[in-house]
Amino acid sequence: MLIKIGELAKRTGATVETIRYYEKECLLPEPSRSEGNYRLYREAHIERLQFILHCRTLDMTLDEVRVLLQYWDEPDKDCGNVDTLLDEHIRAVEDRMEELAQLKQHLTVLRQKCVSSAPAESCGILNALADNSCHN
Picture 1 (spheres, rainbow, N blue to C red):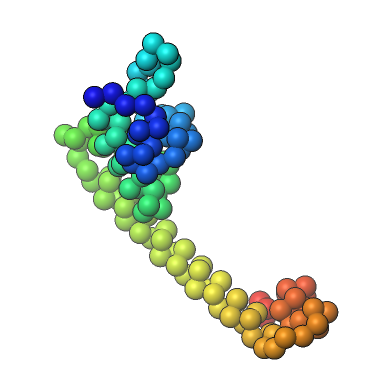
Picture 2: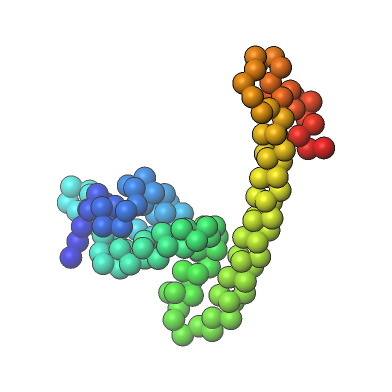
C-alpha cells in the first residue's frame, strides 16, 4: 500500500508541514517517489509517524524522540537507557510544574493589584508590571 502525503496526514492527524519537517530532521525515512515526483509512504511510515506524534504529545523533545527511535529500530538492544531517558523527562516535567506553580503565584499576586474597573493610568496590574512589584 502506497499513500501520498495528504493521506498520511489525514490518517495520523499530522500536518503536511510537520511530516516534511520530521523527514528533514531524519526522524521519518525518506519516502519513495512516484513518476510524478509525489512522495509515497508505506505502512511503516504511518507506524513511525504515530510513534513520533505520541512522544510529542508527552512533551518529549526531538532529541529524546530520536533516541527512542534508535531503540525502536533495534528491538534486541537493552532498553536501560530508555528507562533513564524517561526518568530524566519525568524530572524535567516536575521542574516545569514547579516553575508553572511559581508563575501562577506571580499572576495571582498581579491579579490582586486591580480589583475593580478603573482608568488604565491607575490600573494596579499595569502599574505592577511597569514597576515589577508583582515579584515582591
